[in-house]
Image (tube, rainbow, N blue to C red; front, side, top):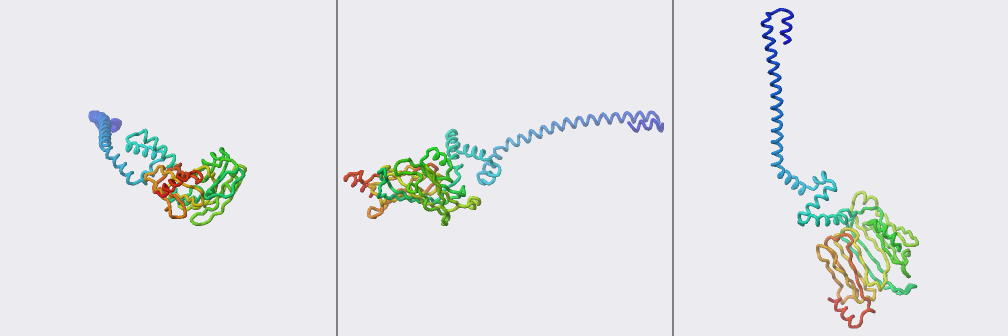
Length: 351
């Protein structure tokens, strides 16, 4: 069109040729526009067909993709760790447990309890050895309440969650409930206030020894009217490096002879528990221990032979124990049984 206009202005060619060029230009312009429109509509249709083809391919391949992802996460937990949040992991665990139990509601409730008591537990204890020794106290206190001295030794392996370990004994219930929420960095005992049982006295409770990997640690004590607290530094390096250490601590307390029972509470998830009660230096006629703790493997209870002078009863749990599990020792005093009953108790002990 521009060429035809230029030729017409210069009058270099006849008007017929100029008109012919003008017509050809219009034809080419129209053809180009029509071609562009056709390409636009056909490309859009092609894109739609391609999208539909991809969607069909994804729909057909989705089960295979899902299986591959699930199998990949099952065989490589590190890949799952990189992409999953704690909330997502909880959902996956709940759904998997629901499938195994064929009960989604039950699985949800069970996993919630497991999450609160185990997943969120700050520590896990391994190879726990607890030795308890009961001894008679000859003198009577001012209230005339006969007592047993209780010496307890705990030894276990753990990755500590706090650089400081505290042991508290109190007769104030509000303080007890406040301190008991600080598990495991604070171990707390409640002592009912009564004559001869003063929670603030060393005679009632005392931390005697604390060591980490065989190294003795300095013990600091603070006392108040309603109780006392012992503090020990475990070490910042073990906490910072998440390093497992072997902790051993010994404490002494008292219990009334007429109480007839002693509880041992498990504060953290524990694998492998060996618990021994030595009551040689007492007037206990018979000692029993509960074996109803929740564990995959049944606890094993054993006693020293009747021919030995020592009197011990032991309980061993090889598997895992969940927090708040309790073992209870129950005794009967010699003064509480008749001669016939004593013979029966002796036979039962031999059995």
